[in-house]
Image (cartoon, rainbow, N blue to C red):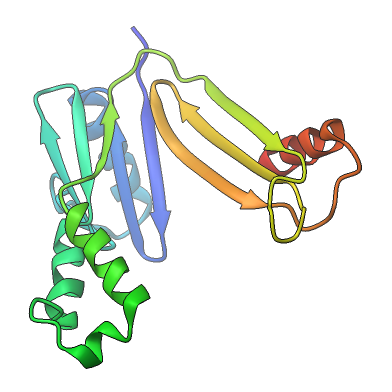
Length: 170
């Protein structure tokens, strides 16, 4: 049986998750012996992200509350002609409203391998003829990072574009 501990440090906050309750208690005891701290119990909301445990094997990370606050502050529920001049803003708010129930699912996984996939499109941007690159990183079965960007410089070949994409991921 593999016992796992993940520790996230953010300014003065520590988020600790483990694969067993006993390991969690042991880690908290060790941390308390070294640092003044308090245990706030199971994580439910951190840095604008709510965390909900679903069944025993996965968590849902969501920014639904934050998205609702954005929509409430924008007041675009009754758009007038002056609002429609801001078409881009209106479209963004419609996107936020349409994806408000989306979130990131994190599943318990027996493997802790870090796997990254990358791809590049040579001269794929129609405006600048620069290459674009995409990547996604998985820790076990969980997507932990993804990106799609235009490369900063021109590539002379598809091989060079792919190489630059891999270099950016690393």
